[in-house]
Length: 245
Image (cartoon, rainbow, N blue to C red; front, side, top):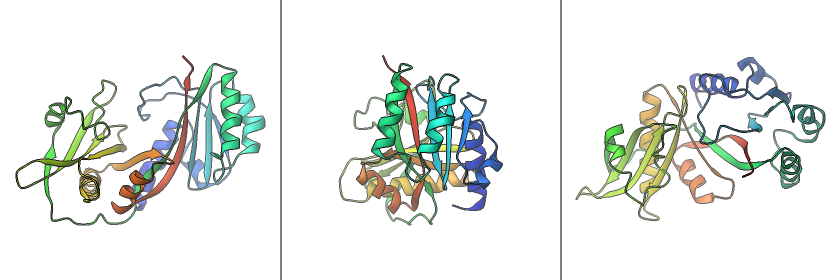
């Protein structure tokens, strides 16, 4: 990840986790008060009691008023950036969250660009917001675009055949002004179409001055391998919580 992209990522995390970008110059674990700020990344369920970020050896725990003392007195001493999402830590966190009517919603690994994206001789079709909206009824597409009101699907890249059949598609949502989240769907396995679509989209997003990133479950190895082949590497991991319904 080039220096400019690193700066944008840390500026974004400072907004998301109610701290300063200078906090990322140290490895000391930080506990902050959770606060939705202008420019924060967008999430479907904003009612989170605790968010945890592990980035470049830095652990940031952002928590609501009710659970903040426990995070400072107990959690900060029990977990580290490297081992924060081991099963014992997750059980500990989930049990404490349940006391307040919350639970862990997701723990994802996120990839950031580092290497040059591999070139491809495949044919690409670039999709505008209007083009993307016309794909909402395509049931094959469940990762590339969100088709939701809280966020915009702003850019897409499709791999197309000689007959203009769509073989794979990757999409970017304006998750924040600095960082755009990517997803993809490939409609044929083991052909490299997903990697090609994702690689091309990463290039386009970087050209626009944004930092592309994509996330997946820790156990979703096929998605991780696609990201790796597209020139991305693990950049951060994140835990988010949700109210128990």
